[in-house]
Structure formats: structure tokens, C-alpha cells
Length: 558
Image (tube, rainbow, N blue to C red; front, side, top):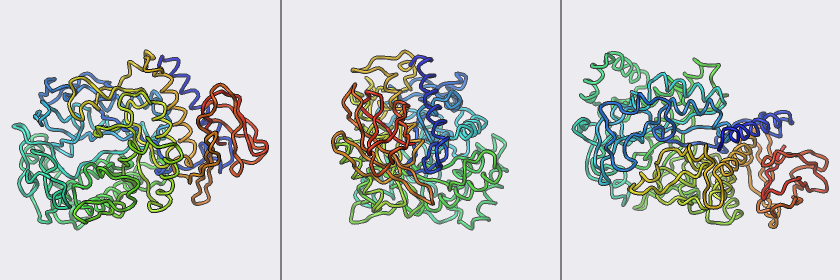
């Protein structure tokens, strides 16, 4: 998108938000509360998003000698902050940014069977207490979170309890009391999913060990060299004294993760490889992190965004909204991760369910979320960093992808570049690397042509849907009701603690022809309502409303 077009999109977004702010309290807009159940979450790999500081592109002696898309590419925390300041996320209606783990990664590369690879993704920790120098500094982390909060955006931190980084000559394994390298998981039952290494040469943290352990010698030496050993030990002593937890491996890691919350104010965690640890580990982590979050809010009253509790969502690989509360671990065993600290789970079936009709998709999700999952939520996606079967890998159904994701009941996860048709199939890239190309800012700036559409038009489509979601919690968190089959029209109604919000959406309207839309039972005759897709307003009459627009959809609310 040209700068002028992007500015126009931002202006529309802000106009819609400010217009809604003058409506009655029950009509949402700026007056409605944020709810995680209906949030729009933007997930990005920091190294692959935006490079604001070329000076930190290669740290610790790393090189650009990896296989295709497996070396560091220069994205950094300052780059994310710059995009927040530009209003990029505000334009998209984003409520929360989920960043990949910023912790210090393996210094060396490894060959995981797909060529030389580095830990650019953040899941190969060397030191959970340090910011990786390739991504920036502690000051950069602080500025990112503070800037996001100043723009009304929450930040989720990706955390790993299951493993450290692979073993290399520069990155030795921690002691056997801390980690195991075998057996490798076979996923036949709970034991072969939890008491094992996820893949070859990926040290599995002994979250099952309840015995006291000493700090890994490599960390002791590192911290002494950095001049912070005494401080770290003092903080650990205070943590174990305060909590009463044994000095077992998992509690060290919990303390280190919670420190990021207490220090910077992260609003929640996304748990990585969750089914590969005992469920109770996450319940304890939720307790420790929640205490840290309350400490941060008390210390930073001007920076906090309301009175939200600490939030946690999880990657339980292959979990589906259709599973309800119980996840099949195989071997006749089930696990309830919602009862173990999680407010939400990532919904891996959206990429398949999106092939359904609108009504089948929307009504099915609404029934699940207001039935077995009532009080909890799911995070839907149509592409991700490690799902090799995205809904639309060639971006030929990009508008449909946006419509189904952003209007589906539940929270929505935009994977960076969904909104700009970033390529998901890269020649020479093997495995999940093909999903992790650098953000295609050039396509947006140049208004690149795709198969039958332009990137700027797609970005604007995402922005309009995102602004509608942000203005109305009913979209993601409300109860779904079909009003008409032709044109397909539905309502969503949300009510909680005296707060009410209602919307009506009509899809697949005849192109180029203003069409009356049924809103009976949702909006009253004589009320003026807004179409968030076009920005136009109209008066309800005889249970219907018609906007002077030929768009194929209308997004109706106050």
C-alpha cells in the first residue's frame, strides 16, 4: 500500500472508533470493555517482522550460513515498536501483540535434518533471563511493552517450559538433573508425550523432577562473567523462600518467566509445547505469573490497561474447539488444560473448519464456546508458524480467509503477513521454514498485484474487519444467531456484568447493488446504525436497514 493509502486506512479506523465513542454505553465502541474471548491477536516472529537496527543483526558470532530461511534476518524489538508508533496495529484493530520468545538463544547453529539452523524463532533458549542481542536490549523490551500499552494494545509473551536449545559445541546440555535427551517422544500415550525429548537433540526440561537442583554450571559461569551472579542468586533465594516451592527445575524456569512480567508488564503468556509437560506445571506458572502481574500493575498504575487478570493461552498441538474441555493424550487418558491455568487454547482445527459454509462454521463454534467451553475461549488462526497445512497456502482465497477468521466466534490470531498475502511457499525452504519468510512490507508499499486482487485492497479488508471486532466484543465473544439465509445474515449478542453489545452482519450481498438487511430483534426502528465496512450510517425502518453501498458485506453496529 502506498503511504497515502495506508494513511487513509488509519484515518478510517480512527474515525470509526471516535464515531462509536459518542454512542450509548451498551453500544460498545470506545465504551465497551476489552475481553480476551473476542480479542484480535497479532502473532509475529520478531526476527522476521521489521528491522529498525541493522547494528544488531548478527550477535554472538552468528553468521548468515543457514539453510533457506534458517538464519537470522535482522528483525528486532525496536522494529515492532516502530510499527506500533506508526499505527500499523491500530489500523488493523489489533487488541494484543504476541511476540516470539525474546530470550537469549543458542549462540551456535545446529543441523536438525533440514540444514544448518539458528534459533531465530526464539524456542531454543540458552538463558531464560537475558534478552537475545540479535533482537535488542532490555530497554527495547520495556519500550515495546510501554508503547503498546500507550496505544491500548496488550502484549503476550511466548514462553517455553518444555525444553532448552539443542546441544552444540557452544551450547552444552544442562546437567542430567535438569534435562534429558532420550527417549524421543512417540506420542502413543501420556508417558511417551511428556517423559521424553520432543525431537532428537532437544533437551527436555525435567519438569517431573521434584528434587532440589543446583544452577547449571554454564549459567553460573555466564552470570559471573556478566557480573550478575550474586544478584540472580539472591533473587532466586527470595523466590523460593516466598513461595515455598522446592528448588526443582520447573520452579526455576517459572521464576525466570515471571520476571519478564514483573519487570516489563507483559499481559499474558502463550505457552509453547504445552501437552509435552505435566498439566499442573502450567497451573503453578499461572499463579506465579499472576502475582508478578499484580506487582507490576501496583508499581505502574499509569501504564496498566484496566483491571484484567493475567491471561494464558496454549499451544496444545492438534487441540480443536470441538474437543471441548478434554484433550485426548492417547492411551485412554485425557487432560483438561483449562483446569490447569489456561483461559484459552489455540484452535488447530480452524484451518480445516474454514472449508465449511459460513453458517456451519459460525454456529458450530458458537455452540461449543457457549456450551462445553463456556467461560473459556479458543484462539483461531488460518496460518501459523508451525502448521504446514494453512487454510490458503497460495493466498488465492485471501479475502475469504480474513472474513472467516475475523468473524468466527472466539479470539482471532492474525499471523504476520496474513493481511498482506505474505508468501507461505518459498523455493528451497524445508519444513516450517517456508512459513517464516520476512514480512513483505515491499508488497504493501508497492501495492503488489496478486491473483485477482491487490495487496492494498486485502489489507484494507482486514483493517475494516479488525476495527469492527475491536469496537464490538459481540463479534468474537457473543452468541451467534442466524437471521436470514439469503442474503446470509446473522446477529451476535454479548452480555456480561451489565454490559450489552449487539451486531448484525450480512455477507455475500449482490455486488454493486444496495440491499436491505434484516436487523429485527437486534436494532429498533428509528435507530441510526453504522456499517463498519463502509463507514456509512443509515436509519432502521420496518426491521430492516439499507446502506448506500454496493459492497458484498455490511458490518452493522452502533
